[in-house]
Image (cartoon, rainbow, N blue to C red; front, side, top):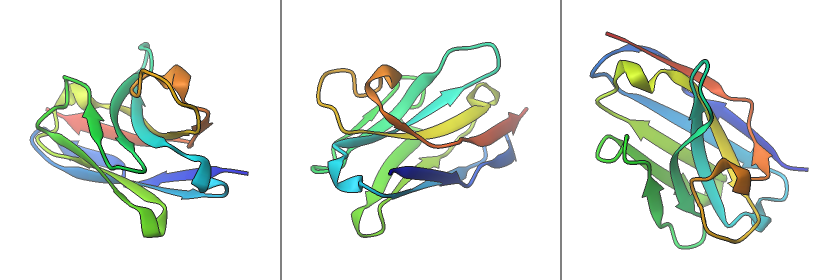
Length: 125
C-alpha cells in the first residue's frame, strides 16, 4: 500500500513563496520518479515538476522554470516543491504523485500510478 500526503499549501499574495511537502509511505522502493502536478478549476491536470528518485535529475514545466524548485530527502521519503515569485495563474490544487513505471513523459500525469489528495495554493494579485 502506498500513501502520499501533501502539506504546505495556503494563500499568498503575488510575488510570495510557499513550500509544499509530500511524505510517501508504503512500497516507496518501487518509485523511479516523483512529481508535482496542479489542476485549476475548469482546466486539465498539468505537470509542474518532477524528480528522478535515484539520480535526482529534475524536470520543470516551462511556466515554472526559474521560479519553482523540486527536491527530495530520500531518508525521510519526502519530496518538496519550493515555489517563489508566485503568480495568480499558479492558483490551483497541487498534487504529489509517484510512478513505478518507466517510460517517457516524466511530466505526463498518465504515467503516474500513485497520487496524494492534494493541497490548495491560492495566489492573489
